[in-house]
Image 1 (cartoon, rainbow, N blue to C red):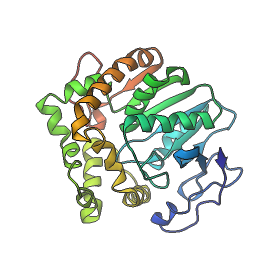
Image 2 (image 1 turned 90 degrees about the vertical axis):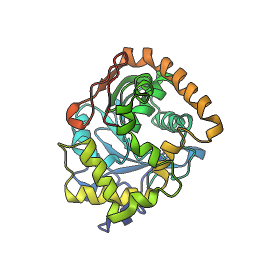
Image 3 (image 1 turned 180 degrees about the vertical axis):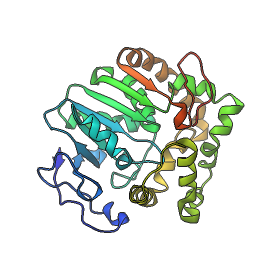
Length: 289
C-alpha cells in the first residue's frame, strides 16, 4: 500500500533522509528539490521509499540500484524510461530512508522486491538492476520468473560467470573491497576523510561519469545515514562462516535456475567505459567489480 506524505523540505541533504515524502499529484518530479517519493508499506517488511516517474497507469518498471549508490543518481536515465513506463526506483533494504535492518541475504532481498510487486497490484513488471540491483534481478528471475516480463542487468555478469571469475587473480584484485568489508568496523574506513573511499570507487568503476556536486552530496548523505547496513550485503555472502559453502552452492544452483528466464526475457549490459569488461555467461573475463 502506498501512503503520501509531505514533499521534500528545503533542508540539508542528511535531513532529506529523515523526512522524505510525496507531494500528492506529482508524477514527473523536476529535480532534487521537488522529487515525488512514494512510501510503500510492505507489511512486516517495513516502509520502503521509492522515487516515482511517469504515468501511474503505464506498465510498471522497477529500477534497483547498487553500491555505493541510490536512486537519485539515476534520475535523468529514469526520466527517459518514464516516457513509456511507470518507473518505481526504491531505496533498497539497508539504504536510508528504507529499512536499515537486515538480514541482507539474497532470499530476503528478493522477498522485498516481490512484496513491492504485489503492492503495485501488477501481475508482471519490467525489472532493471545495476550492480547489487542486477544480482537481485537475477535472483528474482530465478525465484519468480512469472512476475518478470523483461529483465535488464547492468554492470554485473550472470552469477555463474561471476563465481567463475572470482577464482582468477585478476578478479580477486578488482574485488578487494569485498574482503575489506568483511572486517568488523570497516565502515569507519568508508567514512574516513569525508567518505573519500566512496569517491575512489566511483572514479574507478565509472571513470567517464561524474556526479554534479548536489547529487554527490545527496548520495553521500544517504550512505552516511545508512552505514554500516550497505556493507551487510557483502557480509551476508559468507556469514555465518560455517554456512558459507552451503550459501555459495545455493547461489550456484539459483544461478542455474536464472539462466533460462534471463535468456528468454532479459538483456545484460556490460560496458568497458563503466570500468567493466563484457562478460557473457560462457566466456568469463575480469569485471570492474
